[in-house]
Amino acid sequence: MREMIDLRSDTVTRPGAAMRQAMAAAEVGDDVYAEDPTVNRLQEMAADLLGREAALFVPTGSMGNAICLGALARPGSEVICDRQSHVYNYEMASMSAIFGLLPRLVDGPQGAPLPEQLEAAIHPPIYYLAQAGCISLENTANVAGGRIFPVERLKAVIALAKKRGLPVHLDGARIFNSAVALGIPAAGLTAGIDCVMFCLSKGLGAPVGSLVTGSKEFIREAHRLRKLLGGGMRQVGILAAAGIYALEHNIERLAEDHANARKLANALCTMPGLEVDPAAVETNIFMVRTKNPAPDAKELCRRLAGLGVRVDPMGENLTRLVTHLDATGAQIDRAIDAFAEAVK
Image (cartoon, rainbow, N blue to C red):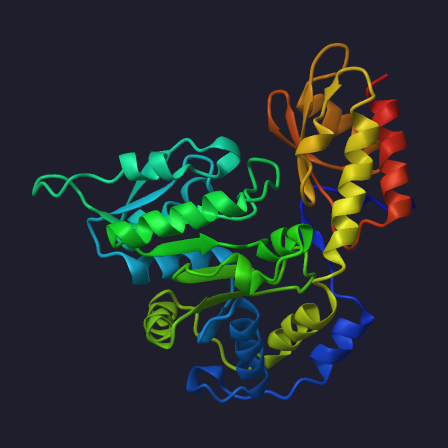
């Protein structure tokens, strides 16, 4: 039976033999009592990698984002974020449903708002207007096609937030993709941001888990909110061991995923009916638009599935492709052949 090449997301990665061995050998304890030594080590590693005082292991990135926003802003205030952001589109409105926060949307270029856009979204201090509680950013920007938040723009946004007295949260689910692509350590890339969430279960290849990082005071509040959301776990060092392995072995290799994405994009842009901008492929995600003579996105995905490639439509004529550690160079070559057949 032909093995399916899955380019739907980097969340489909599976732990390899070495990661499974590390999980099996993990020393565990009760993490609710903060007695799991493997979790404690993972949290220390995460804090060090992000240049923060402390970190907290959480089950999912969505929970991590919700915890961060709930810890930064009080109920009835606004979270200024991009219209394409994950916290707004794909997290069940948790900021509103759980923490009473209102998203205030801006339309930033490639999912990365300009400082002037964010400043315009901050209401004046009038008693009947909801006040800004925090700014939420995303790096890389998923829906924008894995785009990196421009470094100088990010610095300007942080300076604006400090001037206006607003804390900044970073949904850094794929922050290490940005760091590797730019050649800048994640700690330097996120300096000045109050809290950062990053995922272990995407390009880093762990089966479960994310980390929230920040000051010791912030993490104390995040710990309390994790309990509120039912995120307290017991002998979870088995999963934390996978995270440690991921941080030790799978960060620098993200460059391979980026190279595979560029290789795939460069091939697809030559095919009739497929619109791809190879220059916009900055990390491991990119978008493909279809037009005549190619079929629409749904039909394209159906044809590809029959040829052994899984992708999902993002709209009538839009498809997202994501490379990852389980998509080898040979599989990318097969995927290119499948696309060529599918658009005939």
